[in-house]
Image (spheres, rainbow, N blue to C red):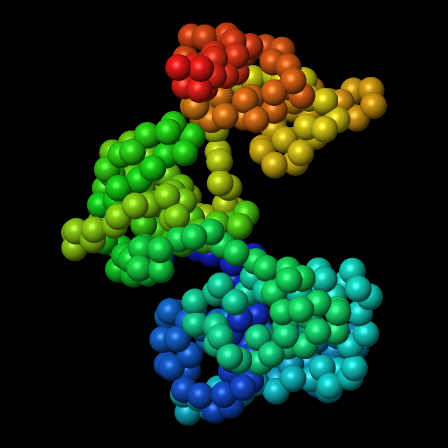
Length: 321
């Protein structure tokens, strides 16, 4: 059975973590690199066959990265342009620091390797003190649970999990078949088949409270190739809500997937978005307060315009009692 396909972004992130480690360990065995980064050796070689095409115009041999694989070992030599001083504006340096800092979360990355040293030098050149400039934190996922998800995704076996659903504010026990672990929007997620819902589901790893491998092999594979990933894909039966936002609440349209956005005067917005569960909408409306006005929609048989007020009254009653 074929493993789930990686997105282009996942593959680039993986390659960017692998290359500097090989450069600092010339002649390392391909099998060792594959073990370190939890890859099939054939997949690793496929990635390395892309690296040697990386370069700058006119793409002559001296302007391309050189990859050599001989007798089961690999060497990578940077092109001449890598030795030239790199001049960045402060904005470019900060963007580079933020993007490459995220690479350190890729399994197998050397915590004391050249990438870390380069990031430290970049922080210093930007005039900051260590981690004060920027910190990329992919949630508080338990490393043991993260490893369990990866191991069972590789072996295609089922796992029983205790899961807290933030949207529904409920704790459930589910049996899932992990497909792959991804980092997205600042958190770790596991793409999987849920045997309770009998459907594909995406679970945040830091909300998995316990994970128990069952040892049961599964034949549940993705029904389509995973070319893109989304942390929320609403179903056709999900409630739809229309909300007017004041300019101070414009962050909502940037944070959550909206189906329609229309601009009003002075930066106000009207948005339409899908809602998976009432507790999520309640939290959002209470947080927004007077900066949001529900225009239309219904959820669980209740007009969406009443949902925020009801939630606020429940919260108030806890303090007034």
